[in-house]
Structure formats: structure tokens, C-alpha cells
Length: 312
Image (cartoon, rainbow, N blue to C red):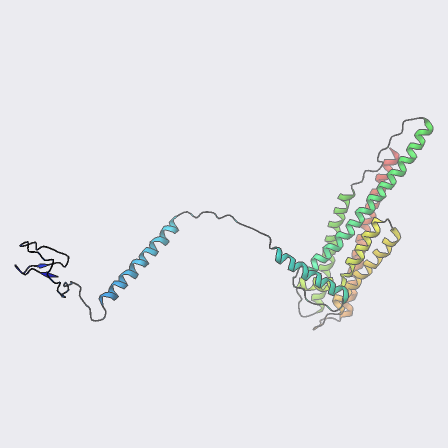
């Protein structure tokens, strides 16, 4: 503050001339007296604390207002982005391959896979290879029969002086039939595995999860993947004798694996494991009988279709 030397009026520090008498205040020194404030001090706090509390309250009110405003605004649908984790897929495939190699090297030393679906994948691949072999075999057989029928028909037409005409005697949807067989085998295999799993739960007091049971069975029978691959290769070469031998081997490995899931399991038993294996054998025989009946019906239908085509 500045004090006028002439009239004694108090002026602010930045005033150059007295507003009362006009005296020049530029050379008047500024006094150290501070302006009185109207702030009141409370015994438990200071003005700075009060100001800080007020600022905090203002911040909280602002945040609450923003939250309320966002809640009142309609939610905008965010696009769902789905991407395939390639690294995770590679790791899963590598783990499956490692588990598969271990089962081929030591089928009886079962080890828990990193995924509960490994056993299901192995069984599905086995059935797929079998159906692919059937598709190839039937396709070649139908093509051979049609070729031979055309040769005979063309020979007779040449003798009679008629025009030769090549046409397919047999129209057979081998792909559709193979797909139907795939579904039938998948359902039949699922029924057999479900029945054997029920026997497994009945024989042993400690219940085993269905996926653990499937993985144990697949570990015993993953060799069938190799035999079914050979079955497919022999179908490409039309080596029907080798196909029959490999098919018998695959069935033997399947029955053996079904028996081992009961015989080799440890734990408290309600019934001796040998009797459980006998029940498993009965179930497999019933399944094979159903499979033979289905195949016999399919062959009968195909034969009637063939003879009908020849008659026409």
C-alpha cells in the first residue's frame, strides 16, 4: 500500500497519483502492511485446508455429474471382434502331436493330454480315414463296373452294326453314401463308448470323467490312426487283400483298447475287472452285429439297384 504524504489517503501499490488530492505517488515507498482479509480461522483447520476440501468436493461433484451424464446416454453397440489366436492354435497342435507320438511309442503308459478333446479328435480322424477309404474303394469299383459294361455293350453294338454309346450303367452317389456311413459309425462308436463308460463307472467306485475315459481309450488305440491311414493308401492302390488284413487289425486293436480301459484301471472296485471286461466284450459283439446288419442291408440295396439297372 502507498500512503499519500499530503492528505494521508491509502492507495494501492500500483497507483501513481493520489485520487484524493492528485499528489504524485511514484516516488512514495510501498509499505509492508497487507490488506486485511475477511477470512475466519477455525480452531481445527486453516484456510488452505478449507480451500482444499472445497476443491475436493467440487471434483467429486464434477465426476458424479459426468458419470450420471454417461449413464443417461444410450449405450453404443461396440463391434465384436473375433480373431483366431494362431499362436495358441500352433501350441495346441504341437501338444496334440506330442501326445500322439507318445501314445504310439508307449500305448500303455497313459499320460494326461493338455486338452480334454484330444481323444475325441483322434477317434473322429480314425472314422474319417475309414470313410475316405470306403469312398475311394466304391468310386473305383463303380467306375470299373461301368467300364466293363460299356465294353460289352459296345462289342454287341459293333456286331449288330449299331452305333456305340458309352453311358454309366450304375449311378452311385459314393460321397453321399460315405458321409452317411461316417455319421452311422460316429453314432455307433459314441453308443459303444457310452455303454463301456457306464460299465467303467459301475465296476469302480470312484467315478471317472467321460473325457478322461475317452483320452485313456484313445491313448490305447491311437495306433488305429496308422492302420486306417494304411487302409486309405491301399484303397488308392486297389489292394483289396491288404485292405481286408488292415481292417481286421484295426478291429482287433479297437476291441483290445476297449478291454484295456477296464482291465488296466486302478481303484476301489464294486465288481472284479474281469467281469467288467466280459460285459465290454458282449457290448462290442452286439455293436459288430449291428454294423454287419447295416452293411448287409447296404449291399442288398446296392445289388438290387445293380440288377435293376442291368434289367433295364
